[in-house]
Length: 117
Length: 140
Image 1 (cartoon, one colour):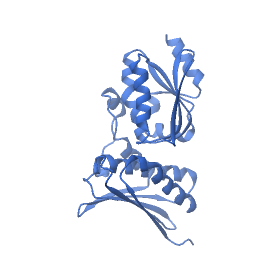
Image 2 (cartoon, one colour):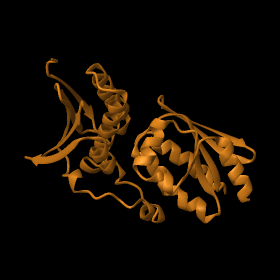
Image 3 (cartoon, one colour):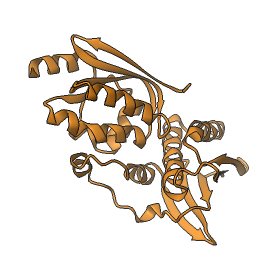
Image 4 (cartoon, chains in turn green, brown):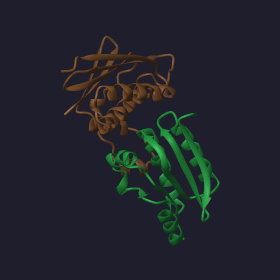
């Protein structure tokens, strides 16, 4: 898909997904697949870095809604980082900031995960 | 004083067309002088409405089509999305409780809330099996 891409890497032992481009009802299945693979492998501490995410529709937020309980039940979390104001605004309109850990920088998420362990 | 102008796009009811629909709305709104914040709002609202038609009116039957109609005048933009699928009256939807949804691992229903928040006026009509969602964004 030309307008959306996910890259996977590890930072300080924590799984990180880098989102690039536009996340909508079409591309959300790619994010779902990537998250599912990580969770099925037993990872419950996941960072989603949104630095290169240019656009998000509610279908994208829906993916986070579907999986957050799974990882929290395992003592983990999905932490979202590096969002542009434009992308954050959509999360904010839907009330996500009170229920999700949304951080400015990836390093803050790493520190939080390491301190929680 | 600017003249009124109208643009239409007919697209298959398929999620892979979402990017094309967003570009259509983005380009014309920009050309018609809307601010970047307003364009972001319009683009997302149209994306959500188009997604709802694919999911609920046509249930992912990509052989169906959706008509996207933009009408600009000196005060506002009126976007109309027309389909011939099942009735889906977005004005009747309540805002879902995010906390409850997460607990039940459910998703959805968020798009309708976004459309209502982002646009100034939203209405729905169904006449002779034709569904029409009308959303407007004021210039001022």
